[in-house]
Length: 555
Image (tube, rainbow, N blue to C red; front, side, top):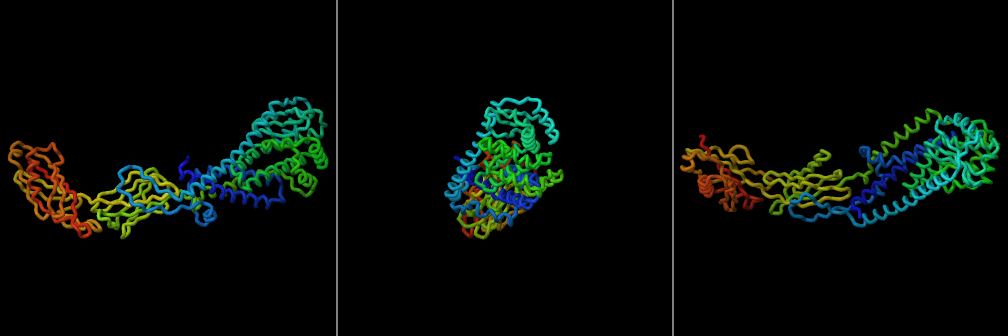
């Protein structure tokens, strides 16, 4: 099963596409209604651009950079499932590289999965219907025989020049005498005629071929296939069904206008269409992938339109061919780039910073680094140690917590997912104290420098509640005579724990390859050192210490 975050993100994407598609198709409907007195070719062009835009919309959403608008985005806020706050469970210091994010309400993921399954079932059925229609159309085409009679070929050539068709058009005669003439194909278009069409009179032959060649010249079959694909993807959306139906109706009326503009009389054309509708079967209805000349569902309106002298029958102008797609692109691109509030693929990171006494650490710096996106987000903890990042883009982050006086805390990978909050209680450990001491043959001491400070170490308030230790008694190590005479030098690295009484505990030589005499001298001296205890919130605590004693023969 898919992860819950993937399911919810998919549903969010589907709902975002639905909202934007509604805006796109509603705009197309308003424009088509405003052009109701113009030609069918113009309205068909509007619906065709809207259908193509509906197919390109998901691709544009995925590819275009995000544009955020709270004003337009509120329209979809109620549709997108919201996520509850993450639980503030306490967890130990993280040493692994992967952190599991807390999940939102389980019911939301289940609801999202049900919705996606319903969409997939509807899409599968609608797409299967389209595939079956194409397969049946291919089967009929294979079983049909080509027509090569001179009269038909001359008619095809003459009308192809009239409609400016450069592609080769094939004429096929199927086995059924009652099949409706229809057109299909894009690069190699075909016109399928019923059996016995070779004996048609000249006027019917010219009318049928004119209508079907008008479909081919306008690429109507390709556009109708796009409409069927859109109807499969958005089977649940009523505006998509309206757009596909309007596209088919306007396609037929635009072809009727093209036939009438070619010189065919309206009465003669209407008579032939009526005769075809009465005598032939509407087999094209079963083939949603084909365009039939006389579908009864729209025939009455077509008769009224072709017999009316006031109808605008103009062809689509070159200016309209370019301006309408340009206008549609100007609407589609910002609409696809728009990120609705609930569509923002982001998550929240929050938590609290504590010291070893379980007290909140104020003013700690929290850094979220996204190396893939090359972004860095920073915030600081409040007086109680709480911090929060709101709406960070999804991705893999590195979390770091930095506070003077404490060891740096780091989680190398925080997988932030949409709608999932990352929350953690972080326990900072006290930083170790490093003392550097240089010993020369004359046993003189060079200035001591603490690693975390500059200059002579002193009692500094290096954190909101941590005070660094200060050496109160320091015994100078002696350079062993045996090492001096042998010309041996080196650095002894000691690890110790400063006890609550200020005494070094558990002295341990960390570099075992050092000369034993140098190590013995360093341990004997450091064991006599005394520190002012390290305080945490006013209480003495133990703290790790690293001491470097450098024995050098150079004064």
